[in-house]
Image 1 (cartoon, rainbow, N blue to C red):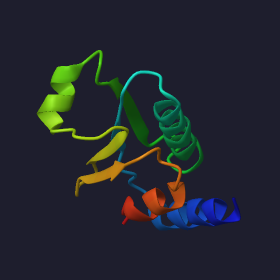
Image 2: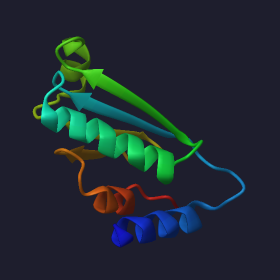
Image 3: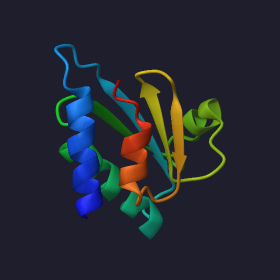
Image 4: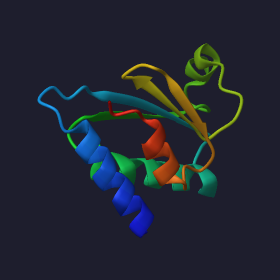
Length: 108
């Protein structure tokens, strides 16, 4: 837990600039499976604690919107895609390693 808090602090320090770019994240899930639910909880927590006010999270259920998964060529779920700011990043799994995700978001 301390590792996540340290990563949040480091991320906020690195991202502290007068112009904050909005993060656009898309989380692809498959229904309400336990793995999908964990991914949603983990990513929402990350958005609330580290990306507060600069995050637009879209949760997309591939059963309800399969065309969106096809457009993004989603092969596994849960999958988190950081659309903006570029470069695009893709994370696969239940998003439990939020520290690694945070480190890969490139706030600079």
